[in-house]
Length: 92
Image (tube, rainbow, N blue to C red):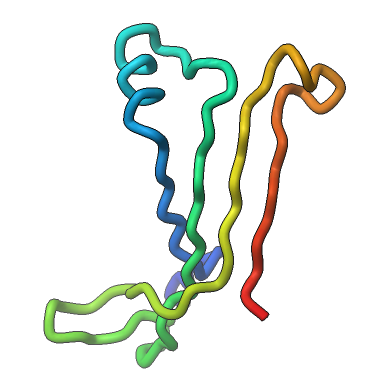
């Protein structure tokens, strides 16, 4: 049996450039940095494995927006939550 994608979404992750520059130098993200994760569904499959065929080839392709997560890391202020705050935004 052909494999199907186990999590049929695309996750596009963004970070502020200054935090990434610090990470490249120290291998650690600075306190208080944010990640923004945009969630997109995949386009409906046409083939038995859930893939589809487009002019660029066969595979899985991003579809409609499905929500977003904002992660803020705050080590000092949020010890009880392991240093993370998660805000989620979903499409209606």
